[in-house]
Length: 363
Image (cartoon, rainbow, N blue to C red; front, side, top):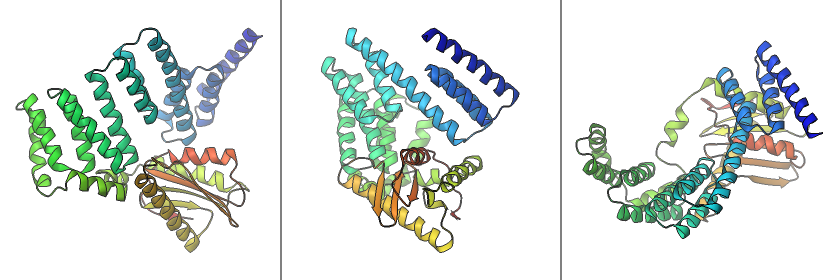
């Protein structure tokens, strides 16, 4: 029976391939990728989605399916690494496991894996990996306590590996994102000691001179980041406009608003927003209110050391307002009743889209 099912699945894949060849479109690519997913062939799903996104960049459903395929491939590799580590642990396996967890954003699990690594074989490589995890946790959480934890490990790594350029590059990244320019310049100075006369480093050192003269202390910079939730470069990233991605947000929002259980759908990035459902002044008030809720939720999470806020839900006589704050963007759905699992899934997928909104649009 199992053999028969696999044979039928392969026949469906063959037909799906022919449809893609005859008519390349997001719908036909999605059908082919889903057939691969039924077989559990995550690498084929990933390859199909990548091919489709080269033709249809920014398509939300293809991007979401690609993300799930990447996650499935990572989980499969993590399972292999876990088995190999139980049999014959070695640093290269620990490093690969932690890198996969970092790449997929599972920072708590990555830190736990580093702790296990250090128990089995404490060395400088595990210390450097712990520093990477702590820095990444700060960049995600943006709270002062996480920043102080990252600095502590960076100090330990610098003391243990004073001549390792990787330590000073990681410290430089942390300090530049924080806006602690004096400390960033000191990192470049150490790198120049390791690579004297390197032109890029010399140019970086000179470019930091003016900034370093007026730079805040590390602690003051941490307090500012916690209060605002903004790292250096965030606003520059928001200013980039990719028309193809922005155009792709609207169909997903329109599809949501067309449903009977959705009164309004919204996508926010930076200081701009797209609101579908309410119009005119009502849309503007909705956008302002949701921005305020997102900002308050993120600030509270950082100040109370609760970590990143993934979902906010408000319920009342008006119905249910569900908000999903992503790292750089956010989405929201207003429903007259409870939020269904299907709508909840759409909400989360929109929050990770990271599309650009070049001007505020309310409809």
